[in-house]
Length: 422
View 1 (cartoon, rainbow, N blue to C red):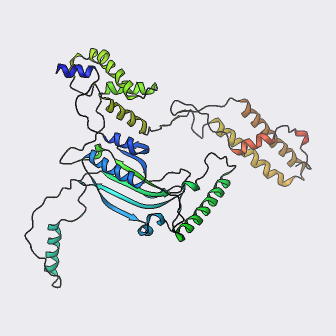
View 2 (tube, helix red, strand yellow; view 1 turned 120 degrees about the vertical axis):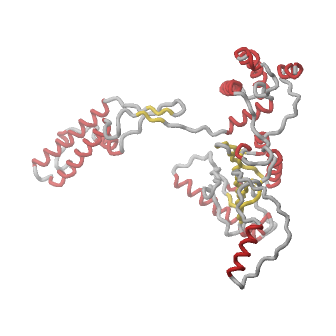
View 3 (tube, rainbow, N blue to C red; view 1 turned 90 degrees about the horizontal axis):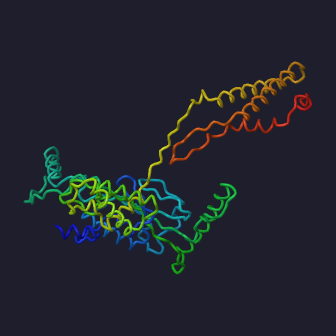
């Protein structure tokens, strides 16, 4: 025990470390995001994807079986001409249980798979249940033959209602027809026009590649995956492997502090954390002197997994609005109501400009608008605090009517208002 403690003090681990799921994800996954107990990302290339699935199942000590699947009708064609003329081209795909985000590269959807853990729910009938149903049907209907009774082995099912589900979507992307994201477009119309032109060129290239097998089209096969972490699995006869690092909260807090300071090297973090445990944690808690617990002395691989988890975890954005007034009680709402009333009154009076009294009343209404705008511009703009990641933003500006009136009444004099001018 003393030798093991000395090795822990020196940062050396003699125990054989088991590979975690996060190390597999860090090797294969691109643009990974952790939301709850699921991680989504993508893998490029069919061979790479098969290697990833094999290693992922080995680390988790389980496997996933296909529950539902669909594939395009053209999938029976050779790989180089799988996408036919009728393929629909997407810029993003938001249908179903797994979205394909916009990346500026057009693509076609090839297949979709839903895989359940092998210890998942019992969604089919057992042999005994099927035989019992046949016996009942034959008893009630003479045209139905009774089942053949054979000596069968009573094999228990391995289904244990494990909730782990994996979603996979296969797409083929065409990077040669990608949208230039660095180009500055004037309006959204120009963006749509550029997309339309690229899609037209891509369809022509697909048609040419389908008619001429020697004319190859550059396509990138990509698999978008949303997979469960080992913590999601339940009811397995053997514990699921590949669990994340088990680190004491005090040690995890120190790692988070180092990450906030920009220290991401796992080896450097391990040295600092082990010194912190010896000099601070153990001195404050002498009862923790049993060094056979790795939760106080995480290894370099465990720290690397912890850093990776922190980097892919999606932090929720919470917006808290602290308004001093409700919408009906704000000064802006009162001013807006006054101006709208004055404008409506003016619009009604302008229908009868031949009458002198009506003209005077119109001048009074315009004067009210001018005074209201001046009073609004002289008052300080109230701010509404929005606590979103420690930032503050001003409230939204007034409506377009107020801004338009403010621009129009600048420099207007009452003497300039005549029937001819109106």
